[in-house]
Each structure stands twice: as structure tokens, then as C-alpha cells.
Length: 346
Image (tube, rainbow, N blue to C red; front, side):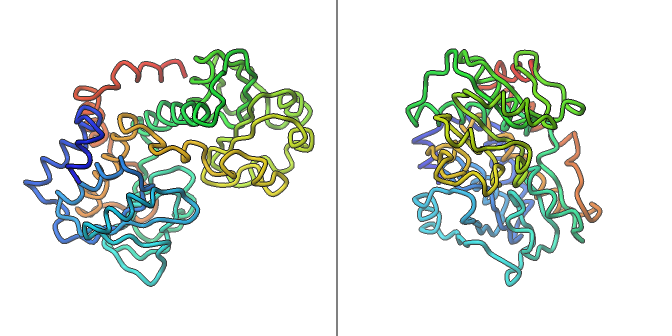
């Protein structure tokens, strides 16, 4: 794997993961531990696997039909002896499940689970095993704000829609992903509107705010939009919030950036770019490695924590000291230090 990675990446794009691989090759904290990793499988995910294998993990990889993945990379890791399982269920047992979007919540895990996304945490609310959340972290903001915002921008350009200047962009959802897309759209010269619960969120200063409880205001905001994007992470989030008929009849581009179908059945797949799948997943590298490597390292580090025991059943945060070490290494040895300052604007 290292030979392939060296062809495409500089080590400065994944300093935290490189440090994990070097340290764990000596300490072997996951020696003999059966690990199922459900991180979306793309070429840059291999950096995560190198660290886990260095730690001694007996690694299997889960792919899910609802989450895009690179079939060529799946074949590549299979040729190197790593099992690739399609939507594994209750019949399989592992010592550790590193999950994404709760897709593998039914897989039995001896030590517990690590969930990569906020949208998957609800599947673990009543879990009898420990569950560590990689989403509730400052590190995750690097991926979701900067990385996903950049991924959306690159995917729009790849789709032939690279001129943002003066265009009206409407974003449903003012969370981390929504703020990142808003930032990149604004930097490219777009006129950005964001829709969310005005009583609960603080909108960025550079957007036009609209309250999600005001259907007339939503329809007015959506009217004449160049691009309408949903980034709530909630299935059917906008069902009943507004009448989508005018939007469907328009020439507006429609984008669903969540794993779930956020627009609902009233908006057909054929009317949404990438058929309702997250638009950046059309790219060979949906999120650039330099933005996601700290998240992948945090996901890995949580596996080592779980193997050590001591966590209660249900969802818990990863200790701040663990996150701090990864973040410091990623900034000091990586290429994103200056860009993290962008987060302060949001």
C-alpha cells in the first residue's frame, strides 16, 4: 500500500496518520484485534489502513450500497489479503467496529464502536456497548467545513458548473457542512442564502438568513436560485417545509450533500445531481487527504482507546487530550495550518 500512496501523496498531507503508523509499528496496540472499518473507501483511505495494520489489527473493510466507494481500490486491497464485505450484518462478529453513518450498527462488536458521523449516532442511542463519537470534535470541523466545502466546489467544477460569481446559492442547513459550502461559495463570489431554525443557530455574517419555519420565505429564497443544496444530515428533512413544485419546474441545480435523502420522495432522483448521493462522491477523491487525515487518525485512535476498556455503554466523546495530540501533529507537520484560520469566520 505504501508504494501506491507514495505515487499520489506527500507525507505532509497525512502527518498524523504517518506518525500513528510509525508509533504503532513498535507498540502494536491492536495486535490480534479483529477490526471492521466502514470508512468510505477511496484511495486516500489507504493511509488509515496502513496505520491500523501497523498496530497489528486483523482488518476487514465494510462497504455499503448506500455510500459510494471506489471499486478499483476495493479490488486492490482484496488482492493484498484484506476482506471487503458488502453490508455485513448480525451474522458476523468483530472485536471492534469503526463505523460511518451507522451502517454497521448491527454487527456484533466485543469492545464497542466508533462512529464517524453525527448522522449515524442515532443508530447507537440505545447501544449496550461503548460508542465513541469522532464527530463531536474540533478535528471533524476541518473535514466537514473545509474539506467538504472544497469537495463540493471541485465537484461543481467537474460537473461543468464552475462559474459561481454573482450566482444565487441556497443552502438548507447551517451545520458544519453547510457552513463550509457557504464559505467556499461566498469566496467564489456567490450570493449565499442559508435556511435553518433561526431561534437555534447563528448564521454566518456573509449569508442571507431564512427561518426554516417560514414556508413563504423558503419559497421566495429558492425562487430563481442557481443552486439549491441540502446539508442537514436528516432524512426527509424538508418534506412539508415548502412546496417544491416551482423548484422542480425551474432550471435550478439541486444538490443533496448528506448520506440520507434529505429532500424526500417529492423530489425525484433524476432531478438531483449525482442522483441524490453526496455530490463530492462523484470525485476520485471526495475529500482531499490533507483535510480528512486528522479525522481518520482520530477514528483510529478511538479504536485503541476502546481496546483498553473503561468506557460506559452508549455514546461518549473522545477525550480532548487524544484529539489535541492529533490536531497539533496535523497542523505542525501538515499543509493546512493557515487554512484552519478560515474556521474562525464561521
